[in-house]
Each structure stands twice: as C-alpha cells, then as structure tokens.
Image 1 (cartoon, rainbow, N blue to C red):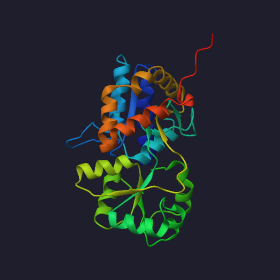
Image 2 (cartoon, rainbow, N blue to C red):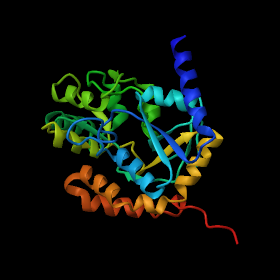
Image 3 (cartoon, one colour):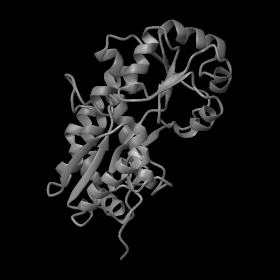
Length: 287
C-alpha cells in the first residue's frame, strides 16, 4: 500500500516533467561517498555530484532536479520506469533491463578487497595475491559486508552464490561498512580503490586493498543510467551529444583526481586511455 502510494507520487512528479523533456533532467542520488557526498566538508565533491554539474555546464539550458533516495529505491524506480537518471551506474552497452545508458563518462579501476592491514596480510597469505575470491567466500569465518543494493559486475554471480555476512540497508552504507571493518566488526568489503582513499583521507582510516583473482576486467566504465522510456532515451541522446565536454570538464577531472589520491596522475592517464577506446565513442554521422 505504502509502496504503491510512493510509486504513484513519483510517476506523477516524473510525468509532469515529460512534456518539458529534455529541458529538465530529474536526477536520483544516494548517500554514498565518494560517489555522492551529501554533507560535511566535501559536500557535493563526490565523483557523481561533479558529473551532474559537468553535464549541466555542457547543457546550460537544461534544468536539474535532484532526489536523494536509498540505492534499492533508485533501482526500484528505474525498474518501474520512473523518468529519472542515476549518474553512478556501470556501462553495459546501450541499455540493459533496468536503464538506458550514456556512453561511458569516466573509468574506475577494478574492484579490490578492502580490509585492515593485518587482515589484508592474512588474506593474501592464505588465499594468494591476487586473492582467490571464491575460495575466500567459501570460508565463512571471514565476514564480508557491503551496502544493500550494490552490484559488482562480473563478480556478482559469486556474490549471489555466497551471500555476505552483512548487506547493510539504509543510507550511508559505504562508510558504515568501512567503519565496521575499522572496528573489527567485519573483516573485508569489496569496492573501488577510490573508496579506500576517501575513507583514509576523511576518517583517519588505514585500510589496505588487495587485487582479486577473478576480476578479469582491467577497467570498469562508469555511465549515467536513465529510465527505459522515451524520456530516458531522449536524455541519454542529449548527454551523449556533449560527452566530449563532460569528459574533459576541468572541475569533474579535479574531483576524479582528488579521490584518486597520490596516484592521480597515473589514474588520469588510465582514465583517458580507456575512454579513448573505439567502442566508447559516439558513432560517426552517416554521409
């Protein structure tokens, strides 16, 4: 009943923007640093906060509206074809069953295991380096946690087969999981190196990261995902039309470098090299 009311309200609000599309983009974001930072000294300095701003600098005539929602609700809204865009998705081609995707906007380094240094030493000693992730998942004494609703690309089938010790619901899940690791209430999580950089910088943490044997992708392309609707397709086309400006936006690059940490120069070379792949370019217009 309550969910039906919420979805009806979202449909009403999103439907009101349909006639004006694509002169207005409805964004959904969640509290998940360093992707979105909704409070504190780095407020609006999340990677995908900066991405939204870069899109609107490239499209100055397009208005922006932002809803803050938990990750599972964003996924549900996209599944219900609510007319909104989520800027922090993984590129899976033009679309999947949930969303229409823009071209890749930036590149993430592959997922790694994040843990305290002592646990990292134990895991690499026992399971190798790179860590044999499936063997680790089979050893249930090692407590894995991650935010509810997160999906992990090619590693997801293993996670579906071996559920975590904790899939934390609610807002602030990324930092809460890392704080639990710091407090020895969890042993490890799975995330990008930039997440450890953010935590170590802002929480006085000391997390280590380990490569994963089953992680075959050498890069993970980030993209904006919009509803599987005519509105969503129009917005995707609009953003793709200014993608070169978005990718080279100085303030967006500055935030990417901020969370890359000490390796920012190497990261930016990696980012630009991967974005230059032919499959990540807009098709040439037909003569």
